[in-house]
Length: 185
Image (cartoon, rainbow, N blue to C red; front, side, top):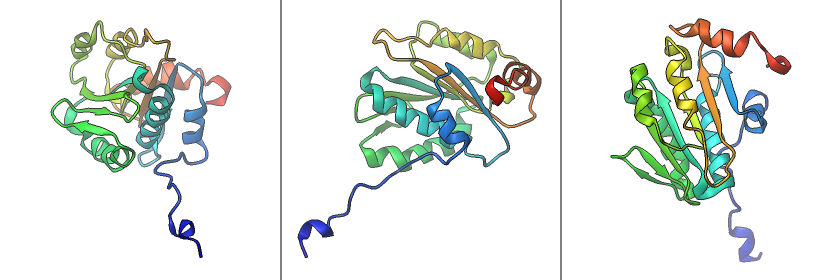
């Protein structure tokens, strides 16, 4: 027996489930809402989308991950620590920022009040993730953040939003993303 047969091969740390997770990672649309019941893999899909995006665009990839409160991101941060450290990502606890092996950066932040979106004027992001968008009573902060999606390096930009049914923003989210139902999605 050769020693090379004893060396384990590369392991897969994350892969999308067939269906909506795979569809999200393959979707060329600029702004995507991924909705559904709790436990459907929506947050996991955003993490996977970031892995794919930062892997493709390296230091040109700059993402930001929002929830209404920073404390609501604790489990998301914990999950990213399970995955990103294994591929060489470095997490800065104070800045709530990942630096990926290729140089891409992912920031965790909050938008407790709609006016918090104004703090990001002038920022450049290639990916914006909004978790639980139905918790936002109005689309105003999301609309303001859309202006931050730009790249001087030519990296394709996009926004990924997730949400459960209900919440104070249920109606505007339904009108914007569900009722139009492009291609059945």
